[in-house]
Length: 188
Ligand SMILES: [Zn+2]
Image (cartoon, rainbow, N blue to C red; front, side, top):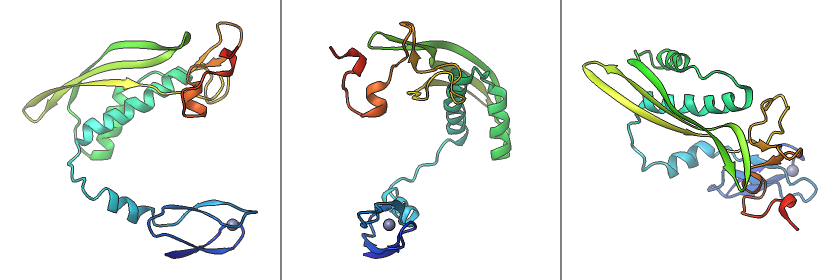
């Protein structure tokens, strides 16, 4: 056991060294706070992982994952060149990319509701590194977007169907309860 002083009410209390997060036991406070052991616990539970990650591929995947959100919520152009430039800056290596092509782009639908913003993209990137030519396909999905359409964070209304004149979120069940329950507007 270790102890920690609550950052809100100042109560000193004990917690298990296996916890990365703890809740203040003062019933009037109940503040949830990190124990400071996050790094140590993470190292311990991920100790078995000894993978040499293909950094360029992982970097591109992260770039596309961010780009599909920006495109669907703000209509910001997906700029493969800028993803490559950032990778080059970060790794200090030539990325070797020669060609990229968008093979597929699709909207989303769920339970009769349609989200007209992009939910799936397939990009194929190819290039040469040293004397090796390579081709990698990226299948990029977008998850839910709970922020209402028209909001600064979601001006394009990604994640919503307002074809009936009323806005309905496609990801209602996953977003708010994490259970497959019918949305209130579907209950009779
Ligand atoms: Zn407290």
